[in-house]
Length: 211
Image (cartoon, rainbow, N blue to C red; front, top):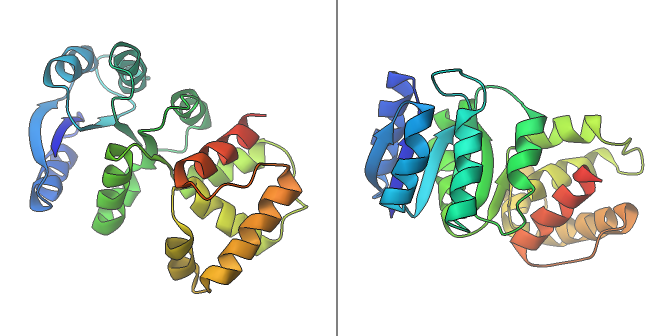
Protein backbone atom coordinates (compact mmCIF):
# COMPACT_ATOMS: atom_id res chain seq x y z
CA UNK A 1 0.00 0.00 0.00
CA UNK A 2 1.50 3.32 -1.12
CA UNK A 3 1.64 6.23 1.35
CA UNK A 4 2.54 9.93 1.17
CA UNK A 5 3.55 11.65 4.44
CA UNK A 6 3.38 15.40 5.05
CA UNK A 7 4.98 16.34 8.38
CA UNK A 8 7.46 19.12 9.22
CA UNK A 9 8.93 17.66 12.44
CA UNK A 10 11.87 15.52 11.39
CA UNK A 11 11.69 13.03 14.28
CA UNK A 12 7.97 12.39 13.88
CA UNK A 13 8.33 12.24 10.09
CA UNK A 14 11.04 9.60 10.37
CA UNK A 15 9.06 7.75 13.03
CA UNK A 16 5.95 7.62 10.85
CA UNK A 17 8.03 6.33 7.95
CA UNK A 18 9.61 3.58 10.03
CA UNK A 19 6.31 2.48 11.55
CA UNK A 20 4.53 2.34 8.21
CA UNK A 21 7.35 0.48 6.49
CA UNK A 22 7.46 -2.01 9.35
CA UNK A 23 3.85 -2.88 8.53
CA UNK A 24 4.54 -3.31 4.81
CA UNK A 25 3.39 0.11 3.66
CA UNK A 26 5.48 1.73 0.92
CA UNK A 27 6.25 5.38 1.67
CA UNK A 28 6.50 6.85 -1.83
CA UNK A 29 7.00 10.50 -0.87
CA UNK A 30 7.65 12.65 2.19
CA UNK A 31 7.12 16.43 2.24
CA UNK A 32 7.58 19.01 4.97
CA UNK A 33 5.97 22.16 3.52
CA UNK A 34 2.37 23.04 2.78
CA UNK A 35 2.84 24.16 -0.85
CA UNK A 36 4.41 20.80 -1.72
CA UNK A 37 1.51 18.67 -0.49
CA UNK A 38 -1.07 19.07 -3.25
CA UNK A 39 1.27 18.55 -6.25
CA UNK A 40 2.85 15.55 -4.52
CA UNK A 41 -0.52 13.93 -3.84
CA UNK A 42 -1.73 14.49 -7.40
CA UNK A 43 1.51 13.18 -8.87
CA UNK A 44 1.90 10.12 -6.64
CA UNK A 45 -1.79 9.27 -6.25
CA UNK A 46 -1.13 7.22 -3.08
CA UNK A 47 -3.43 4.63 -1.56
CA UNK A 48 -3.51 6.84 1.55
CA UNK A 49 -1.92 10.10 2.71
CA UNK A 50 -0.93 10.97 6.29
CA UNK A 51 -0.89 14.75 6.70
CA UNK A 52 -0.16 17.20 9.50
CA UNK A 53 -2.78 19.96 9.79
CA UNK A 54 -0.25 22.73 10.40
CA UNK A 55 2.70 22.97 8.04
CA UNK A 56 5.19 25.67 7.01
CA UNK A 57 5.26 28.42 5.98
CA UNK A 58 2.34 29.76 8.06
CA UNK A 59 1.71 26.81 10.41
CA UNK A 60 -2.06 27.37 10.26
CA UNK A 61 -4.06 24.92 8.16
CA UNK A 62 -1.92 24.20 5.11
CA UNK A 63 -2.20 20.43 5.50
CA UNK A 64 -5.97 20.54 5.85
CA UNK A 65 -6.45 22.86 2.87
CA UNK A 66 -4.19 20.64 0.75
CA UNK A 67 -6.22 17.60 1.79
CA UNK A 68 -9.50 19.27 0.83
CA UNK A 69 -8.07 20.49 -2.49
CA UNK A 70 -6.65 17.06 -3.31
CA UNK A 71 -10.00 15.37 -2.70
CA UNK A 72 -11.68 17.91 -4.98
CA UNK A 73 -9.29 17.03 -7.80
CA UNK A 74 -9.00 13.33 -6.96
CA UNK A 75 -12.37 12.42 -5.39
CA UNK A 76 -12.14 9.79 -2.70
CA UNK A 77 -8.36 10.09 -2.22
CA UNK A 78 -7.93 8.57 1.28
CA UNK A 79 -6.45 11.06 3.75
CA UNK A 80 -5.67 10.72 7.46
CA UNK A 81 -5.02 14.11 9.05
CA UNK A 82 -2.83 14.37 12.15
CA UNK A 83 -3.10 17.22 14.64
CA UNK A 84 -1.22 18.17 17.77
CA UNK A 85 -4.35 19.47 19.46
CA UNK A 86 -8.10 18.99 19.42
CA UNK A 87 -9.26 21.37 16.71
CA UNK A 88 -12.99 20.83 16.17
CA UNK A 89 -13.25 23.34 13.31
CA UNK A 90 -10.66 21.44 11.26
CA UNK A 91 -12.29 18.12 12.09
CA UNK A 92 -15.70 19.33 10.96
CA UNK A 93 -14.35 20.79 7.72
CA UNK A 94 -12.50 17.67 6.67
CA UNK A 95 -15.11 15.19 7.81
CA UNK A 96 -17.97 17.07 6.17
CA UNK A 97 -17.00 15.12 3.04
CA UNK A 98 -19.48 12.26 3.19
CA UNK A 99 -17.65 10.00 0.68
CA UNK A 100 -15.48 8.35 3.34
CA UNK A 101 -11.77 7.67 3.13
CA UNK A 102 -11.01 10.42 5.65
CA UNK A 103 -9.76 10.48 9.21
CA UNK A 104 -8.67 12.85 11.98
CA UNK A 105 -6.21 11.58 14.58
CA UNK A 106 -4.31 13.27 17.39
CA UNK A 107 -0.55 12.92 17.11
CA UNK A 108 -0.37 11.43 20.59
CA UNK A 109 -2.10 8.34 19.21
CA UNK A 110 0.89 7.56 16.99
CA UNK A 111 2.69 6.22 20.07
CA UNK A 112 0.05 3.48 20.11
CA UNK A 113 1.33 1.79 16.97
CA UNK A 114 -1.55 -0.66 16.66
CA UNK A 115 -4.12 2.15 16.90
CA UNK A 116 -2.26 4.28 14.36
CA UNK A 117 -1.89 1.46 11.84
CA UNK A 118 -5.54 0.53 12.32
CA UNK A 119 -6.52 4.14 11.57
CA UNK A 120 -4.38 4.23 8.42
CA UNK A 121 -5.90 0.98 7.18
CA UNK A 122 -9.45 2.11 7.95
CA UNK A 123 -9.01 5.31 5.97
CA UNK A 124 -7.20 3.56 3.11
CA UNK A 125 -10.11 1.14 2.91
CA UNK A 126 -12.59 3.98 2.43
CA UNK A 127 -13.70 4.22 6.05
CA UNK A 128 -14.20 7.32 8.19
CA UNK A 129 -12.19 7.63 11.39
CA UNK A 130 -12.38 10.30 14.06
CA UNK A 131 -10.29 10.56 17.22
CA UNK A 132 -12.46 9.83 20.30
CA UNK A 133 -11.05 12.88 22.09
CA UNK A 134 -12.14 15.12 19.22
CA UNK A 135 -15.56 13.49 19.30
CA UNK A 136 -15.79 14.27 23.00
CA UNK A 137 -14.92 17.91 22.38
CA UNK A 138 -17.47 18.19 19.59
CA UNK A 139 -20.10 16.62 21.82
CA UNK A 140 -19.36 19.16 24.52
CA UNK A 141 -19.68 22.01 22.02
CA UNK A 142 -22.71 20.63 20.28
CA UNK A 143 -25.80 20.08 22.37
CA UNK A 144 -26.31 18.57 25.82
CA UNK A 145 -26.39 14.80 25.68
CA UNK A 146 -28.04 14.23 29.02
CA UNK A 147 -30.32 11.73 27.29
CA UNK A 148 -27.34 9.36 26.93
CA UNK A 149 -25.84 7.34 29.74
CA UNK A 150 -22.11 7.48 30.43
CA UNK A 151 -21.65 4.09 28.77
CA UNK A 152 -23.63 5.20 25.71
CA UNK A 153 -21.36 8.23 25.37
CA UNK A 154 -18.35 5.90 25.47
CA UNK A 155 -19.87 3.72 22.77
CA UNK A 156 -20.71 6.79 20.67
CA UNK A 157 -17.06 7.88 20.82
CA UNK A 158 -15.88 4.46 19.70
CA UNK A 159 -18.42 4.44 16.87
CA UNK A 160 -17.13 7.78 15.63
CA UNK A 161 -13.62 6.30 15.67
CA UNK A 162 -14.88 3.82 13.10
CA UNK A 163 -14.85 0.72 15.30
CA UNK A 164 -17.09 -2.28 14.67
CA UNK A 165 -19.34 -3.75 17.35
CA UNK A 166 -16.77 -6.47 18.02
CA UNK A 167 -13.94 -3.94 18.39
CA UNK A 168 -16.04 -1.76 20.71
CA UNK A 169 -16.90 -4.79 22.84
CA UNK A 170 -13.22 -5.69 23.16
CA UNK A 171 -12.21 -2.11 23.97
CA UNK A 172 -14.87 -1.63 26.65
CA UNK A 173 -14.80 -5.20 27.99
CA UNK A 174 -18.48 -5.84 27.33
CA UNK A 175 -20.34 -8.27 25.09
CA UNK A 176 -21.26 -7.57 21.47
CA UNK A 177 -24.90 -7.98 22.45
CA UNK A 178 -24.49 -5.19 24.99
CA UNK A 179 -22.80 -2.99 22.38
CA UNK A 180 -25.65 -3.57 19.94
CA UNK A 181 -28.17 -2.62 22.62
CA UNK A 182 -26.26 0.57 23.48
CA UNK A 183 -26.04 1.54 19.80
CA UNK A 184 -29.73 1.01 19.24
CA UNK A 185 -30.44 3.16 22.29
CA UNK A 186 -28.10 5.87 20.99
CA UNK A 187 -29.71 5.97 17.56
CA UNK A 188 -33.17 6.03 19.09
CA UNK A 189 -32.38 8.80 21.56
CA UNK A 190 -30.59 10.95 18.98
CA UNK A 191 -33.07 10.32 16.20
CA UNK A 192 -30.51 8.72 13.86
CA UNK A 193 -31.15 5.96 11.32
CA UNK A 194 -30.00 2.51 12.42
CA UNK A 195 -27.20 1.09 10.25
CA UNK A 196 -24.82 -1.87 10.49
CA UNK A 197 -22.45 -0.34 7.92
CA UNK A 198 -19.43 1.01 9.85
CA UNK A 199 -18.86 3.99 7.55
CA UNK A 200 -22.50 5.04 7.53
CA UNK A 201 -22.61 4.73 11.31
CA UNK A 202 -19.73 7.19 11.62
CA UNK A 203 -21.32 9.54 9.11
CA UNK A 204 -24.58 9.42 11.07
CA UNK A 205 -22.71 10.44 14.21
CA UNK A 206 -20.95 13.25 12.36
CA UNK A 207 -24.25 14.43 10.89
CA UNK A 208 -25.60 14.66 14.43
CA UNK A 209 -22.55 16.58 15.64
CA UNK A 210 -22.89 19.01 12.72
CA UNK A 211 -26.58 19.66 13.37
